[in-house]
Image 1: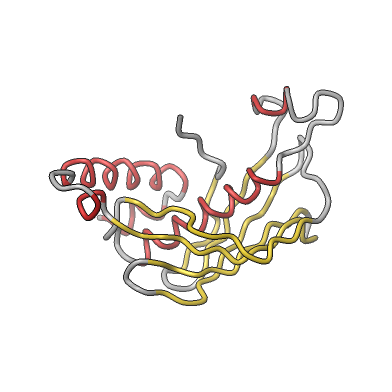
Image 2 (image 1 turned 120 degrees about the vertical axis):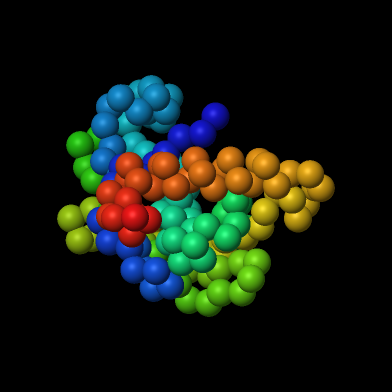
Length: 162
């Protein structure tokens, strides 16, 4: 199952930073279990939202060179207060360092300007074909789907593609 924890990209400067938003609503399925009488976004999903935003920054910065951009490591994670329905998490990620196969980013999630979560994330970048032969067609499909999703999250991407 694939799900997006980013609703909109507000700012994207390749090789520098991204700012994106996630508005939490009662419609989120996981809130039925976490916690029924006190619904809050689980911390692991806050980390996932930061990872997804950071991955968009990486993809655009490298012109979609890799079909896979995934979390390798989360360090120095610090949580603040809960994120509840009706609140919007503003996620930012700034590149710290980059190699051909991984990117280190400083990330933060804020609500109304107050920090709710911080972490240093390391994302791994690769193509499926590098791991298993004859996977190039899947790499191409994943890149195409990523570009289509990005066009929904960040309409400026369409302008840049044309």
